[in-house]
Length: 108
Image (tube, rainbow, N blue to C red; front, side, top):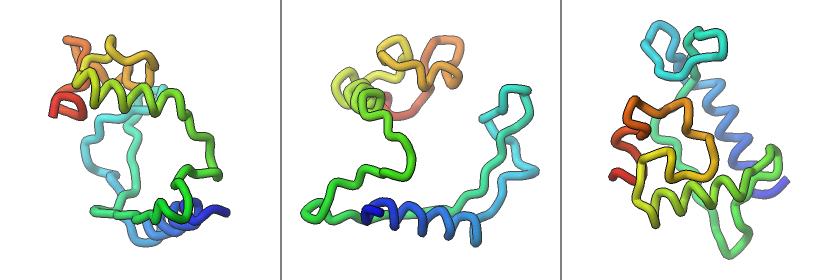
């Protein structure tokens, strides 16, 4: 495993062992059947990578490099939060009535 993978696995273990559940809270995400998609979370997780050793791309799960690059360009070059400016459809379900994702990413 890469060093990024080891950090990722350790972070997941930490979250599962010591995180807290959003059960009982109102959550925005929903499963396809409409039920709330609760999570287990830990506040303030920081992973540090030494780029002189390796690039921190995970190998344990698929990484959509094209979509990730498109989203970065959407945020930094287009400075947008309108989903119509994004080539992928990853944010479509999060869009509001105006077709934006609200005060996030490019907006800020």
